[in-house]
Image (cartoon, rainbow, N blue to C red):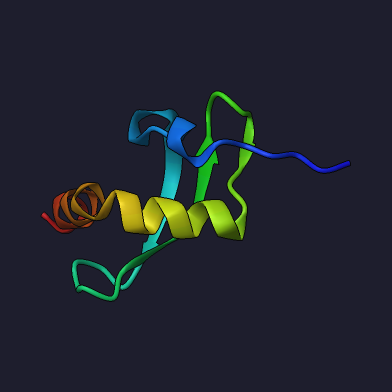
Amino acid sequence: MKIENNMSEIKWSDLEDIVIEGGTSCDAFVQSAFHKVWNRELTDHELDHVTSEFAMNMYELAFNRKY
């Protein structure tokens, strides 16, 4: 069974348990995240999309966790 999701449907507010590797540096990426609406962990392809699409959100999340 192949599950296809439209990447544009991923909203930062739908994600929880977000793990960011690389902190606040420019090479940071989302290592794992759980999508509340889809009720599952994101795939590697979806994580790549989230990393590229939500760079500012990642920075703010990592920064706020440090302070």
